[in-house]
Image (cartoon, rainbow, N blue to C red):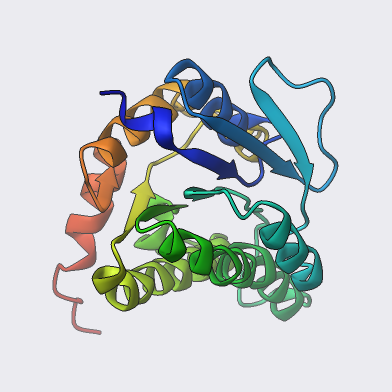
Length: 230
């Protein structure tokens, strides 16, 4: 039986990049319904994809959409932003605040709004797109890393709360992906579709932590290494 044929999936941040790759892959996997959410939905969408308007930082809009899409059985929290910041930047607090509002609080708002429907259906999936950056500390990456580390904690706590409710909560970690967000990065990058394909296969297998590439595996391993003496 096709795992995805009974799933009606909401993908946030789905206009382009990884979100668009998830939407296309889900259609090809035979998902019953694919809702592609974005602040300004792209039209037209590929066949089988239904565009919906959603700004994850607008809680009222999130709650309204959850009421309208009560059929959703899987949520892929993909919406996210990236801005560089260091401790010494004059706008560091503002940058971190903007990242948290999208990458953390937006994820929380969508999760909280759609979880009651997932539970009502008897089972469901919440998949949160995180990052190798959840564990990495590098100059200039403070705002993004803080937001993703917080989102990882949110994911782990969500899993603990929903474990008894038959809701699978999966964290998806990957290194640099070839999207607009990483356009200025000169190094090797992952193909968005390959990341989506790997993540969706692992979700179907019941995985609740997905380390897509060597960078994410190495970042997690390094996170438990002893902190050097000053």
